[in-house]
Image 1 (cartoon, one colour):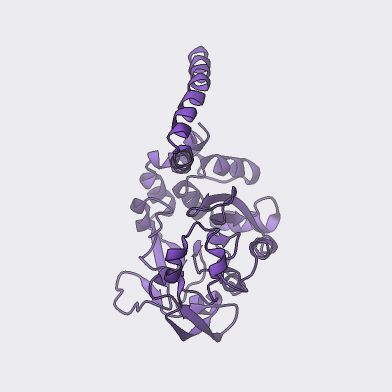
Image 2: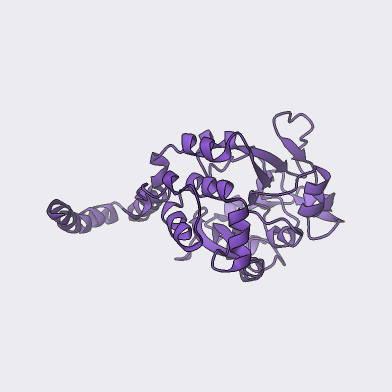
Length: 311
């Protein structure tokens, strides 16, 4: 305890000098962003493979990756060594998944109802293609220089067949969904409206605080809708540069609201999968607290693990 206090005191003395040095070099923001990223991934230090193997007992977790250019977990939300615990279903109306023998593939769009939607295709930046027209007036807020605005030129439009998540999963005989990832450039809310009876244990959703596309729903509508579905926001991670002091785009992480009976039931009915997802995503302290509140089993797999994020 005494040595810990000394280390803390020394650190408090050193940090201001380090900060001033990096400020002089005009790299203080980069340093802070680097350290924040390291903090978010601090629990990657652990290897939970054996614990998850025990929890799942050869069962795969169902993952729906909507906006899957680059493949499952291409954004490295979690370490790639954990992808073996998932049965991914990839969704992308742009790419042809017929040659994808490794994963199931839905080669159409998703929406709140069955329909055809116009897709604005950006040939110079395919990953930013959207059901909404790009708003170039917003690009400076995202840190883009005017010489790069041409990357958001619409090179063609296509009519895309769309259906709901619920109907699409039922057609594949999928009865439940463990992990849902949404990265669809503004249409996340409309896609969530098509969840129907599916209740993912963890949702990772891209959210634009400052809209990059015209007439897309506001981020507050999306959060209110997920709140209405009985989900809690438990984490967010900044995406890309911005000229505002707060992020203009984030990945937000949601789980069922464990503080009421409905959310508690969802978690307890699939608690092995829930514990596995929380370990994989590094949410150790929260997992411990939820365990205390609703009485999760298999606590030997996580109660003695130190959450390095809070060190």
